[in-house]
Structure formats: C-alpha cells, structure tokens
Image 1 (spheres, one colour):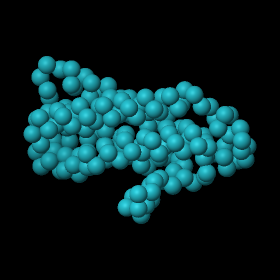
Image 2 (tube, rainbow, N blue to C red):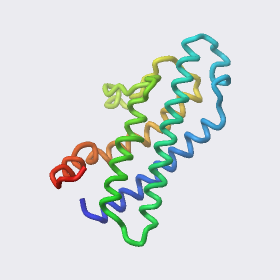
Image 3 (spheres, rainbow, N blue to C red):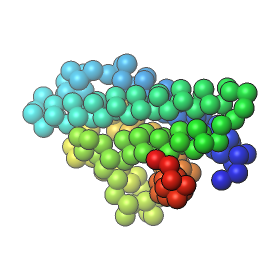
Image 4 (tube, rainbow, N blue to C red):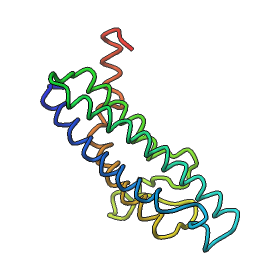
Length: 166
C-alpha cells in the first residue's frame, strides 16, 4: 500500500479511535455496576452488566494503546510505513475484534440486520438505554474501522510471511 495511503489511513484511524475512547471513558467514568443493576437486581442482570463493563474496559484499553501508537508514529519526522502497517494490523486485530467479539458475549453482531438499516447489534439481555446507547454509538465507529482496515485482516500477514518475516 502506498505511503500516502497508509499515512492518511493512520490519521483517520487515530481520529476515529480517539472519538471512541472519549465516548467509552465518559460512560465508564459515569456508570457503576450498582447504578446499572439498580432497576433490575436479578442474577442475569448482574452477570450481564459485569461482563459488559469488563468488555468495554478492555476495548477502551486496546483503543487507547492504539491511539498512542498511532500518535507516536504520526509525530515522527520520517513516517515509518512498516511500523504503521503493523499498528493498523494491531488496531484491527485488537480493538475492532475486541468490539465485535466481546469475551463475555453480552452482545453480538447479527449480520442479517446490517442490510435492513436496523442496528446489527443484538444484546443477550435487555440493557438500560445508556448501556445500549454507548454500544450502538461506538459500533458505528468500529464498523467503519473494520471496513477501512479489512486489508489488514489477512493480506498484511500474508505479505509478511511471503517476505519471510513474522
């Protein structure tokens, strides 16, 4: 991929991740497990919200690390294409995958809804509006990143293997 494309992709990826980080931080700093389970104190609600908060914290950390890597890369006087490609690969495989494949499976993507204009995210348990809104809000960001970085899903590593690198 040409250097100008990699650099502009790095810039837009960093901007989008910064937006996602900002939204996630705001939510996680504002809501606690007890606030989320206040209206429904059942075991299912508690398990769901524990898992959701855990997954969102992991997503936040992966995204913050990627923002920092891309920031360092973009501040360097000489743009390092190999480092940028590796950083974009990491964004795809850590941040994007952390969103779409959450460890605790509080939500999942149902691709059948993607073509209908409806939200493709389906929750295992009906969450409070605030929890639903944060997941749906950042889902748009991570969907865009997934589309833009899909090259790094397989082609980047295939290219590296062909060059004899890991």
